[in-house]
Image (cartoon, rainbow, N blue to C red):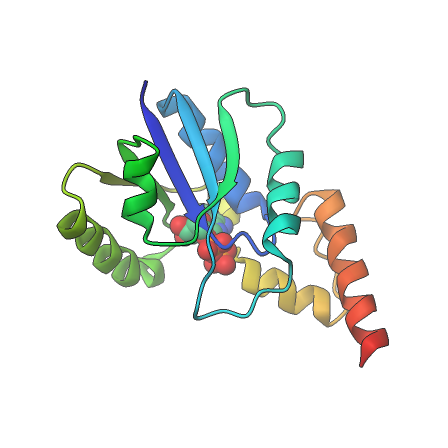
Length: 164
Ligand code: ADP
């Protein structure tokens, strides 16, 4: 059983994330998509909301499991018996951070490999951060996220506005 962990903030799920998942399922017997907290980012959606979005858009894959992780990624990967960590590589700008993380994770757990997958070119400029920024300013994000995620963004920003 070759299991991989695909960790990320997924705040929210974008077509780029789904593209990476579609590639990973071809390579592994099981892909655990794990919502991880990111101390550098304030999240818009709760962990539960992010997991629900990922689940809703991966139902076509019987080998994808959506979960969340709290501690160290390599500890989680080992506890799951995973052989690999999957990360998406969009552009050179991702490389330095990802390279550092991959080598650090290898130091911490030599038996877990990091695999980088490149998305379709159309998604190389796409990030959750940019999608949130466009949606916050009232732009249309239909080309970047699944329909229900777009609706969730509209609802979230409307509720934040009414609270303010
Ligand atoms: P972001 O907030 O930048 O979308 P995440 O933490 O949710 O980042 O990303 C999780 C993983 O998915 C990371 O490996 C990231 O590089 C990758 N990823 C995010 N967006 C894309 C995309 N458009 N194409 C390929 N990989 C992506």
